[in-house]
Length: 312
Image (cartoon, rainbow, N blue to C red; front, side, top):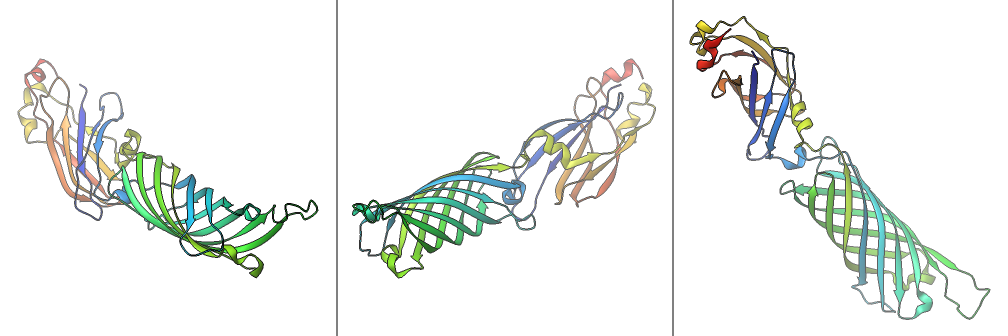
């Protein structure tokens, strides 16, 4: 006989509970082979959908919001990396490297600014698909002026170093676990360490977009749900067709389940089902909570249908 067990669970971490369901099929006759079918949503999406590392690219258009000697606009092209802290996934140390192309009405002041920023970001999710957050970063840059003296072929290029500080908001659409598309309003201050190039010491505001690829495994994918609970080797007694009514209230064997996640799993329901010989799964256990690494031994009962009388 081919016995199968179905496990239903909801999980809760810090916020109000949302249902998470999966069914795990265990083949007792020929070995221990789980098949998982899943639909899930989490009450704490920040932790549930945490990723290992994010790598992204971005584009921004910036304009000065303070008075400046010249009218200019800036275009920023950057790359960034985020590492969410394992113990507090909402916070992620962040690094950004990029190029700021500054275009000035008086063209001799056109220049490129190569920058590097370090800081941290905070992110909170509404759901798997939507999140918001922000970054605070500081760093430095080098501005290269190549046309300060356009009539002097021997003038060469000039440069200056700058201090940079920025505050960025993020509203993100996550079409998949591994991909995030961010709209980013930004305030940015830049100030030269040289008084000869303080014409562009100012505060700028702009709007940009970035795309980030996130490394990690989607917890809603079947392999991830399989890893949520580990099933021990089932122990099934010899069954007799004549005793099928006895098995409704008396166990036919046992199996162990273990929560192998790092967070509690709550409202766990375990049901036993054997195709052909049962019309519906039989609820065999309920647990209000399984702590991380907690193991429970479950007694299996079964309500067999008329097909069970055909053989043992």
